[in-house]
Image (cartoon, rainbow over all chains, first blue to last red; front, side):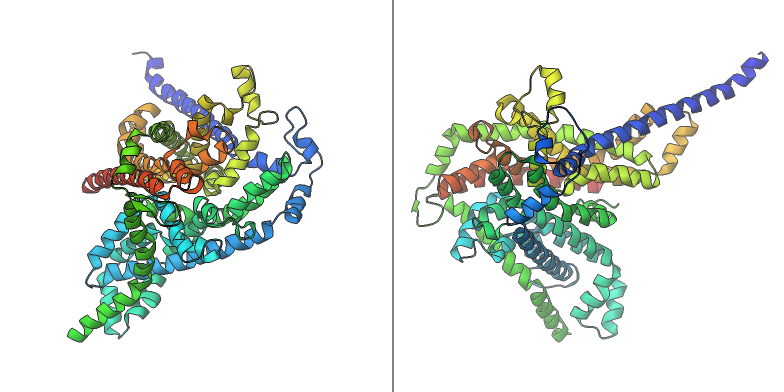
Length: 291
Length: 292
């Protein structure tokens, strides 16, 4: 064997690791390009919303607005009920979040920690409701809400959206995973069940509650089909439903339309960006994966 | 002891009461009522007459219903496997990155998932606009002319699928990322020491170990996309809705536009049966996975 042969494996390794670096850098670059393309629709909407209506229909591709303006936003604020829609969305989404999460924590705790008749039946009902498509029930939800005269009201929007079985399932699994000693020790100390739930079990992991609350809020804010059916009165619409009304009313005026879209998406986008880790946690929990 | 036992039941009753009332009233009752209504010839609101199996006979002979089944299936085919594949690809790209770059890139991929469908609709409606839409710069060189995608039947479902993958993929990406993180690092280190190529690492380590998550994503997507309504409804508004009709849209049309509550409930029962069947399948798949 000659001396060059002796060194060649190492040289080969070095060449190879250089190659790996180049391939790795290329993949990273590709990832960044893909992310930019993926994000483009959102960026394009924001950029369009800052243009004048003339500029949006000018031929040719112009990425940036010539003279950024908030006129589209002002127009939507002044000429639509978006303020009221915001209020409606906030009232309904916050109520759904608080009530659904509270209800789920109580039910999940009872099913996990207490023994009572009908416990299994209840658990099976929850698993069943997890499977049943909410969209199959729209007709009957409409009939029920019409029957109690709750169409076109906040309560009418809220009630059918309280069916969020995943939240109960996640809570039950969380309570199941806690060591029984906690409970026994607290019971010895004379704590009652309500104290146990709200002072011992829930505080042990507020992260789960936060995660479930955020994902429930985003889901409620985004729901389209039910609020769309339950409300005909424009003053009672949620933002999610209302902004398509802006589009119809303003005709060909893309800056305005997209300003409305940006405003409608902003709260949930912010909720995600601020609580990224919790959103991730909620999604992996709801799919039953340990993150 | 007996007192404790009774106390426990009482506490449980108080804790589950709100839940039982809401689920009884708005889940169990409407489900039963839906089945009952499917045997009636009834308007949306008001009295109906019992017609036995007539609605079901009509359903099986209904060409629009068959079309809705086909369109829904077509949409599922276009979204479920391609979407999951794209999500896996993105997760593999994102998982290599570190620190702030990873969070920024992941946010870019995930953000669409948290947007309301009407926002997504307005964004894409603008991008696909026949005269001014930015996507026409991509479509025109390929096809030779701008295409009104939401009014051209062969283009409708593929574009609805594209938009849906863009919108809902964040969910699968997160599941894949969690799955990839659960693969022991030592396996990759050992493979690197053995001089395995990227492809070998993927095909011999990553793919087999990520397969359970892939199955999970596929089944979740399948059940989700069977219930497609929002995007198809919004984009087909004012156009030839029958050609692109999907199942939930047909329920909506019969109940709220044709005022046929009984027949709408019959279609809802059909959707119900389909989704529950696939859910049971998913449950079995997950159980098998859990047993492994």
